[in-house]
Length: 206
Image 1 (cartoon, one colour):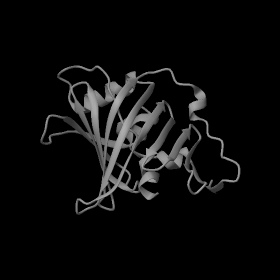
Image 2 (cartoon, rainbow, N blue to C red):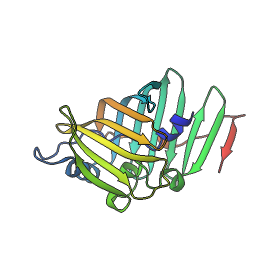
Image 3 (tube, rainbow, N blue to C red):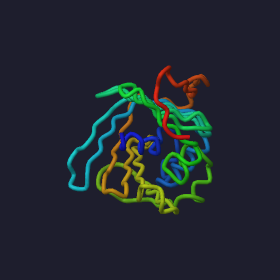
């Protein structure tokens, strides 16, 4: 559950037509200026400091800026993370347990702030174009605040699409996320981002 709790801070950036010669930082800024909603499928793999796979999950995500998002995990187990603009709810159906936090505390200077919060990312992050092997164009986002639980986030573009995301946390784990069936600015119902605790569920947190 630790990795899924941290994942709510690693929402993905998806596709947007951008200038052909733009660097990763410029692509990211333009994306945030023009994107209000997102919908996609995701596949996530977590590896430890020795490169051993410790988790592999898949599911779907939806995002409504500012501050609302939803991640639904369906393989190999079910779990929900919902940000309603005020609170973040993490629901584990198997345990019938809910963890809830104020969205301001759950996001802070996190990767989710790149999408869900202010467009002025450079208040919370140092952004740099990053050169890496392969055909993706990368941007490196380093938090200015140390108490975030992670050290850096890398976002990889393939042409006009942000195809990959990597989160490097302070425990030596690397979270790798890839996306498919991307939809930019789809019409999303406000009820998508409302969470009602099921009857009898154990609620932990604020």
